[in-house]
Image (cartoon, rainbow, N blue to C red; front, side, top):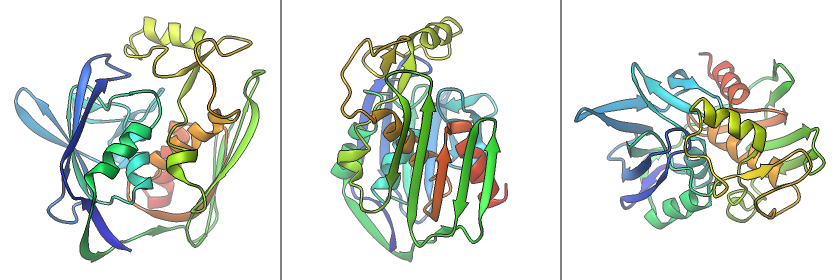
Length: 271
């Protein structure tokens, strides 16, 4: 596969999950194979934040990157869509505190990238390849990475909740990301949402951008699939693991979140 960028500039506007402010994200074609780069403005000055696990400053509720006193929140859904669209190089300028949460899925971001088209460079794509089995245990979360001629994720979650319970989903090249993964929305317990909003962590969280549950049921929407929860966990993983570019490997994940995903990537690349 040859390296790619988008063909035309595109943008999208929406509410940030973390900051609650109205944010605009502009995606611009790369002039060269410079990878995925994030740009933000502070006091009129443009700052670059590398798309790299070393830039991750916080993984509570989302994957957030930054340097010194500037940050961009909730990049995982955009990264997931870029991964699925095989876009290796793009300049992303964020006006506001982060990537818009939209409906809590990546479907709008996926369609945005698709609308931008694809431009190929004459340089071949470089893959990170898992060459030996690696296992990371992070509390109750476990990721095992093994050599595999492609990208495959076996995701299992297990929640003590009557609607969720134990769910497993397998993602590989045979799964249609647009139809089977991208529409899957993030989810949270109503009590957790209230606590996080009280301390200012998710100022933009609402019933429009998440599946919200109480102790017994879903209180704000209907599921697209009974296993929408595990599909969203795969969506997040696809985004988090793409921070250093395309990767070949089999990933067996149990009860993982952003923190474990990023720690696994750091181990793989030796950071």
